[in-house]
Amino acid sequence: MRCIMLPILALAAAAEASRAAGVDAEIVFENPRVRMVLGADAAWRSIVDKKTGRDYCVRDQKIRFASARVGGAMREASRVARRGDRFVIGFGGCDTQLVYAVDAADDRIAFRLVEVVGPRPSH
Image (cartoon, rainbow, N blue to C red; front, side):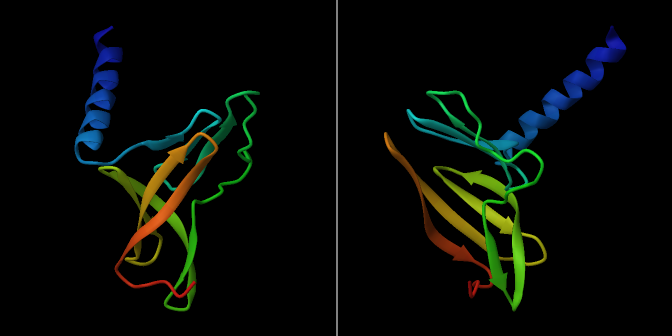
C-alpha cells in the first residue's frame, strides 16, 4: 500500500506546486449555457452545451486557442497560464505572449486581447 500511495502523493504535491506557481492543468470558462475547458497546451479539451450535455469539441485533433504570424512564420498556441483574472497564451518557436481578459455573460463568453508581450504578431 505504501508503494502505491507514494507516487499518488508525489503527483498531488506536484499539482499543488504547479497551481502555486500559477501553472494550471486546464482553464475553465463557463456561463449558464456552456462550459469550455482549455488545456495547459492551449488546445480545447471540451466545449459542452449544458442543456443537452453534448460536447462540441473535436476529439481526434487538437484545436488550438489561437494561431499567429510572428516573424513571417505561422505559430500555434502551445501553452496557457492563468494570471489573476486574465490568461496568457504562449506560442511555440517564439517569445510572443497574448494576454486576454474574459467576460462571461448569460449568452456569451468574450475573449478580449488586452496586451501583447514580446514580438508583435502581424496576423
